[in-house]
Length: 210
Figure 1 (cartoon, rainbow, N blue to C red):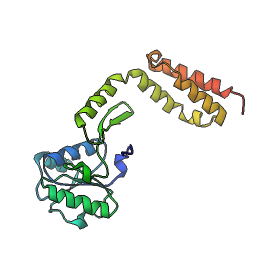
Figure 2: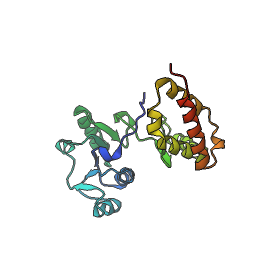
Figure 3: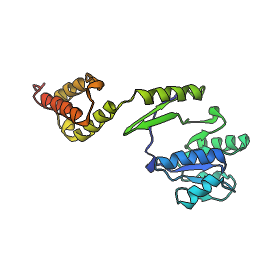
Figure 4: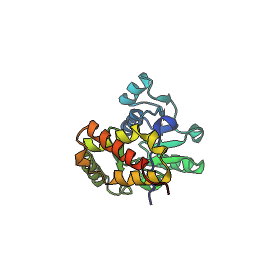
């Protein structure tokens, strides 16, 4: 069974073993989210070389050796040799690291789901690795369903975060109950969202103490 989790990319240390096209794709995704992965490989694909030249990745020009995993929290095995990938996975698991193997779901302790984002909303879909195309299709459906109203709502909840935290428990519960009832279609502008959230917040403040 999978346990869903989002990682703060800027706070994790990640190593990718492999220097080919697949490794380049994995590295580009991590860099996009703010990580600075290390690549272990004798050679680099052109796309990886470009990332290195920009200072977006670090490169250890070496074949795989278990000691090279020291100090990393996340390991991605992305060589073109399934035997080497399996060995990387075994070494990573033995030292308590999270590992993803690009060519063998059974060797992984985590998988990378189909994901997307709109504004500050991130979402991900995984089918236990069995049907990545189906997961991507569902991801695309989520992307179509998310509207500007969802973004306005999230933005206003962030803006009023401090005030919401200051509410007594009973009032806070009442506030969130009202938020759950908001019709997203009514949040057609940021100003409308602000007015609605401010109104619910004021009503919650008037909620009798429990």
